[in-house]
Amino acid sequence: AAVICRDSDCYELFHDEARKFTSKIISYGTHQDSDWRMLHYDSHNGALRISVAGAEIDIKFPAVGEHIAVNAVGAIAAASHLYQDWKLAISGLAGWSLLDGRGRAHDITLSDKRTIRIIDESFNAAPGAVIAVLKTLNERPAVGRRIVVLGDMLELGDASTDCHMEVLSFLNGANIDMAYFVGDEYRKALQLQGLEKPHISYEAINGVLSDLLAYVRQGDEVTVKGAHATE
Image 1 (cartoon, rainbow, N blue to C red):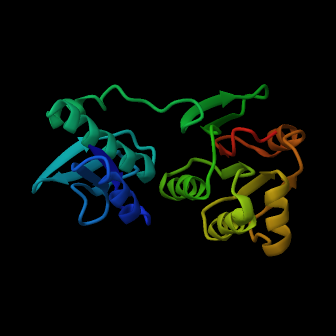
Image 2 (cartoon, rainbow, N blue to C red):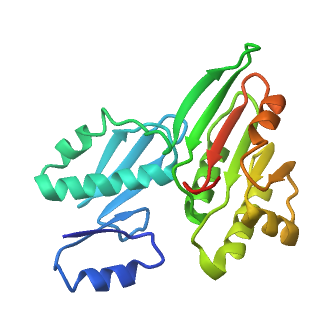
């Protein structure tokens, strides 16, 4: 069987390719034609509602963002096919937690007793993933200011500058108070397009930490996102 996200712009391509190897295609996502469809997700309390075969199912899920909730629906679809038991698949989410580099939050107390929250999304970055994280920041309530540290997205070829400019365009409308950029690709995109939000650009990671520590105050939330190879 092939489990494919119905929301993807490339769904038809994936579907046709998968058909060469299997007759069983299982789709998931928010699309109305998804076999496993996410009907509702509340990022504040983690309430997740899905539908399958005409039945609606309510699930309690960690409040970590719609993009991860959609992935969870895909995981449920895959596990349900393997074990022929959707209740068993859903129960497996009960002990699930975010991984380091994949959205785990760390509350850190600094030497002067300021407490800040670090959202660790540092494992990797692609345009869709970065924008999904920024959307989650918009939806999630915060005690203090929202700060992002974004490293270059790598291996994008000729589309690199356009992809980085796409992130900047989204940032202009996002609920972000301060942005730190690391790398030459963001530097080039900022020169071409600019950013209305307060921001600083760095050639390398050196220097970001000292400036960030000087800037943050009690209750601030700092999200870190970039390619794993960013230095």
